[in-house]
Structure formats: C-alpha cells, structure tokens
Image (cartoon, rainbow, N blue to C red; front, side, top):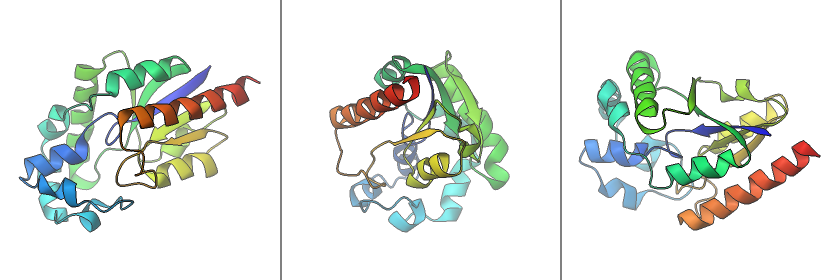
Length: 186
C-alpha cells in the first residue's frame, strides 16, 4: 500500500485559472509558454498584483477544483492512502493562504488529510508518492527525500505539457502508480 500525496494548486485546484480570472487576465492562459512554471515569467501578472490576491483568504477557499479531481482521488485510492500536500503562499500571505487552503479541502474533499509544508520532500519515505505539477518538487521528493517516488502531473507549465487531456493524464498517472506499487510491494 502506498501513501500518496496530491498537490493542490495545479493538480486538484484550478489555481492559475482562478488567479487569471480574479485579475481579469484570462487571456494569459492562452499565451502561456509550454514548460515555463514561473507565473511572472510566463504571464503579464506582476508579483504585486498576485500578492494582492493572495492576501485574501477567500481567494484560496473559493478556487474551483479541476473537473478530474474526484476521479483522481479515486484512482489514487486504488493504490493506497491519499492526502493533500500543499505549499502555502509565503510572506504576509502565509496565514491567509494556509487558512484558505484548509477551508477549500474541508469543502471539496473533507475525507482527505491536508499537509501544509514548504518542503514536500520532508514527506518522502519508502512507499510515499508525490503527485505534483512542479518538476522541481517531484525531483526534490525523489532526490532529497528518503526513498519516495514522484509523479509529475502534466500541465502546460511543466515538462509534460504534451499530455493535454484528462485521459492522457489519467493513463500516465495510472502507469506510474502501478509501477511504484509493484516495486514497493515486491
């Protein structure tokens, strides 16, 4: 049995879409360059404009789940225990984003435990799997952790940008989790 940690923003939660909508910049999603993770590098959204939004706890609590979230949780539950692992926005926004993310999880998936941490690799151990949309978080979980596995969740801002549909993403995740379960369980 695996312990699976699902990232919130970009995996289960439509964070980028919500931020662009809140700022009236929905067109930024269409222009997003493939493989560029940094929001400020990929869009015209300034750090100051984003921080103004991040300071509102309701922004985090009111974000929409991706349509595949329920199916993704169910898929992961076939392989083990599922928790959320999320990094709150830093600085002055930290308490508000933490509160908002916890409220979001209680609203949309109350049965799933939430781990808020700025070091997801601290959750790494044999049998643990991180599913995240940020290449660096997955790499750190594998390399600097303690024997965990990582699955990059395909999004336009990471190296798996070519996998666009939910079906392609689901197949990728299923193959990775099947492999890790086989390796872990012998």
